[in-house]
Image (cartoon, rainbow, N blue to C red; front, side, top):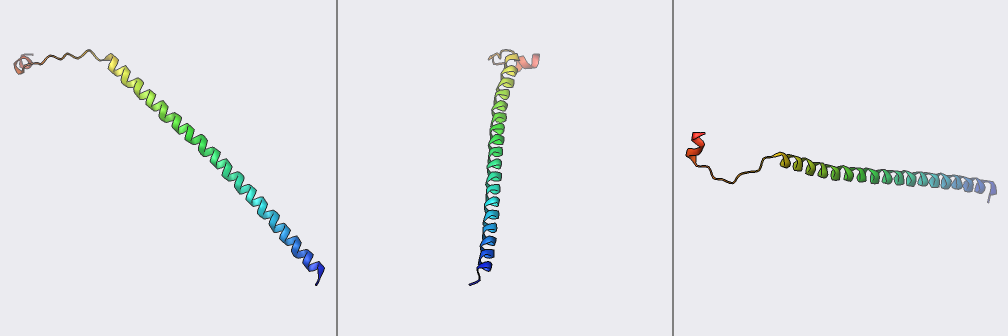
Amino acid sequence: IDRALTDEIDAMVEVIKNLAEKRLKETELMAKTQMEAYKVLSFFILFLMIAGVFFSIYNVRSIIKDLPPQENKSINKTDALER
């Protein structure tokens, strides 16, 4: 058996393993970075939704506050025509 060829094959296999490990680490890092970005985006969207709910409640309360009190008198048709 030729030892030189075996050593070359072993070296090639080692290079391929190193490249595969490097690519795997890069892929894992990219996936982790994307996951963190999705988490931040999710929290931001949740914050905007909660802020929207509070803003809507504030607007409704400010509109209702400015309305005059409603009278519960029943108006006859003749009274409405006279006005």
